[in-house]
Amino acid sequence: MHPATYSGGFLGLVVLILDLIAIFEVINSNRSVTAKLLWSLLIFLFPILGLVLYFLFGGREEHNSGYEVIA
Image (cartoon, rainbow, N blue to C red; front, side, top):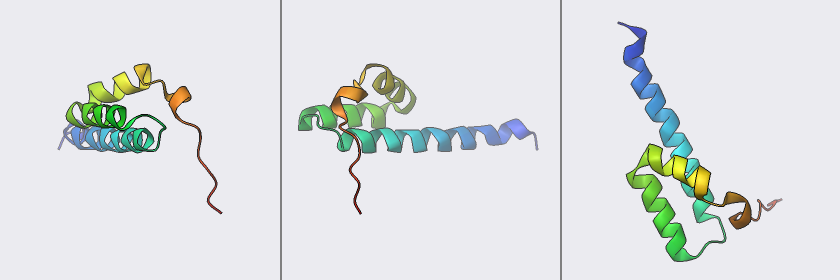
């Protein structure tokens, strides 16, 4: 088998992991429920394009107040 035949599965896994991270970040942000739903749907329906648009135009710094320490 040619090594390039496995690249689609690996790249798909990387995109899936990045999408899950972005959706988790959107859900934990201080955006309105409507904005959370729209960003999550965009990332879910268009995985690569939605991810790129979110990281470019999502305003991550102003909507994420940081993570709180649990313990």
